[in-house]
Amino acid sequence: MTESISVPIWLAAVAAVLVFWSVLDRLLIPSSRWFVRRRINRIVTELNTRLQFQIPAFKLTKRQVLLDRLTFDPKIMAAVDSEAHQTGAPRDALARQVERYAREIVPSFNAYFYFRIGHYLARRIAQSLYRVRLGYSDDESLSKISPNASIVFVMNHRSNMDYLIVAYMAASRAALSYAVGEWARIWPLQTLIRSLGAYFVRRNSRNSLYRRVLQRYVQMATESGVVQAMYPEGGLSRDGRLQRFKLGLISYMVSAFDPKSDRDLVFIPVGINYDRVLEDRSLVRMIDSSADQPSNRFIIITVLKWMGHNLKLVLRQRWYRFGYACVNFGTPISMRSYFCRHEIDPHALDPDARVAVIARLGEDLLGAIARTIPVVPVSLIATVFVRQSAQPMSELEIKAHVQRLINELESQNAYTHIPRADRDYAITVGLRMLVLRHFVIESDGLYRAADGEQSMLEYYANAIAHFLTPVR
Image 1 (cartoon, one colour):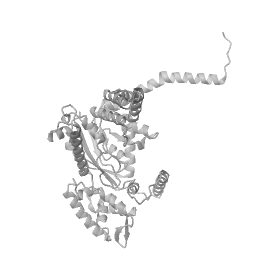
Image 2: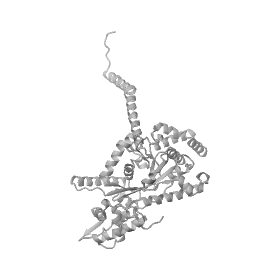
Image 3: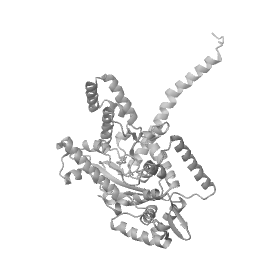
Image 4: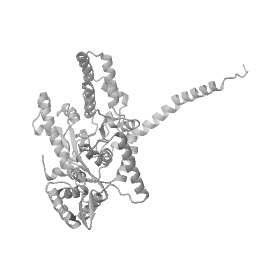
């Protein structure tokens, strides 16, 4: 009984690993989960006391529970039965397909990560690249929104920086849930995005079963009061103008909305504009039929060169931030009031009439977004050079043109961001940005548009062109 037993070293190592794993699984992991969950619950309670739009229980529900609710939703089950009947595909195979779609779409929101880490990173990145400003906010109307309402921020899409800047600017109001395209479905980016509460969308998918799963998730989130943010244009503007309104996600929300329910559906228009869009040359190149479209290798090399160039400028202390990024929050549009004002009963509409109503709503929302877009210094100066492209101008002449342009914009009720409340300073910083980027050439005290850069000047001028030639 007291004799020693010899065992191989590898067996002892395996036994030690198993013992360690048992201790970890039975003691350390459960206690760690309890500690983390307790801390997150405390953070959520604290946040809900100061956020204008509270974090709903649906957003905090475990992801597996949401997956089960979506996968076994009665409408999804009916869609599976219908698909099996029409195509002859096995019902079990379609059910597995639905589960894959649900796992692809449903986020895994982490309040601690969103507000403690995500918000910090968004603020640091945004402020290191731009002078971020809140231009205008209709606080009086925003304060009147019912705390029980479902909120959707709808905005123009200028840059991939929009995600960070709008989330940062709206952090005192709500935790936003974005609809993100397939471009972000790469590891580890997709895990990061899911933890921030975003959900993935296949923008051009024509698979009816996938669209049904996406529709039910969006409707469930909206009915549960999740604050969402979306870009109705569907993608980045390539010419600087607002693009055509894509009704997909909004039609999902509106088609399930009941004006007589306790929860209103409210759209908040958001306008954003930049003195410099990081992707501007790539976007303009996409609409140039004479230009060769770049390969992925070319894009990667170009990005690395751009980063290296900016790093050199930082080391030489010659780097400037990319001008101003300005965000406006417009007057909210309540669907309950909208249907009442237009005397529409959404449940009494036939399919064709419903499509027409949603299309009209899309035009109204697009017009509201257009009116909310701020005017920034580079857009002002670019507009002057587009209008006066044939002749060189002195700085004094440029200022005279800009002063008249500002008066013209103000007559259209456009919000013009004037840094330091000084028009001369606004003109100076806008002109300096265009000269630094070689869009404008200065020679002997006269400024002119650089050869071959007319399309870039038009890109920045187009951001505010709808104020000068209103079409809505």
